[in-house]
Length: 398
Ligand code: SR1
Ligand code: MG
Image (cartoon, rainbow, N blue to C red; front, side, top):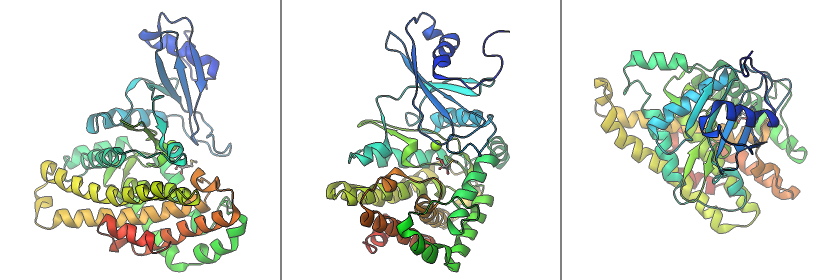
């Protein structure tokens, strides 16, 4: 049998040979090296280089997730991720990595190496800022989502696309980790920082109003097939350099609420802010707050402009429809930002911005701040019209 005709989970030493076999640019390479560089929760990511300075990234799905041996997923998920990267390259050129090859047997794909970029979360933790980031991210969110909504696409084509991107397993992870467990620990896998455990039980688990709204937001996530979204747009899913932004890891993509992507972005900018506060880096904190302001306002401005250019449905062109639509997206956005702020403190998938805070008192305060802001975002989600509304709420909890 020829090589790579049956799936196996590749190890570092297998991947260089795989790339040499699959990519003609590497046919003459003799000194190839590969290294596993993945730090995500699900898949394996390898960087492959050769003596000519060529490099590519190989991403492969395993049956078992990296975060937990008890969590298994179908390896077919990787096809959806490769396909959506290719689609997003059309909608948001330059803002996603190029996919060179998808392999349906090995359940992996080969893509552009982004080693001249860094993961945004890591860069934020070192206090770096990126002048073009918010402009790029709002372009990415607006272009990828609006291109796939019913008011723009033929609704029959939209339903076909929606079928192709039905993603039950990955959605189930979010349904549990974002929308359920943070409010009741029903699967007994939340990770509470012990000095905050009683406070969290009282302020989060024991708040019936909060639980009710979280349930309603979960229902929206389950039923609101609005646009093809990234589905996990946090600062670990964004590669940056001073001159470029690339969105990676869209394995959670599905037809869901546009506000899910924008809400995630706001929450993770706020985690960066909180970490900057602990380090007393005031200029970084000012930059992140301004970025939260701008991500909302630029999203609204660009979405509104693009709407006028691309909407085809005659009913969506009625006076008042666009502003109603955008206000519902903002309401979803603040709901999701609040959920994300809570789940990354309380749930099993936590963020370095918070867990790396060594000083006990500072961590207690940082967590409570995120939870208070998150709770307010969720309960008052319909009140936010501008970036300034969001920033004012954040500042009211300082
Ligand atoms: C089991 S995966 C845990 C988390 O990592 C991903 O990045 C998603 O955010 C998911 O909720
Ligand atoms: Mg990911």
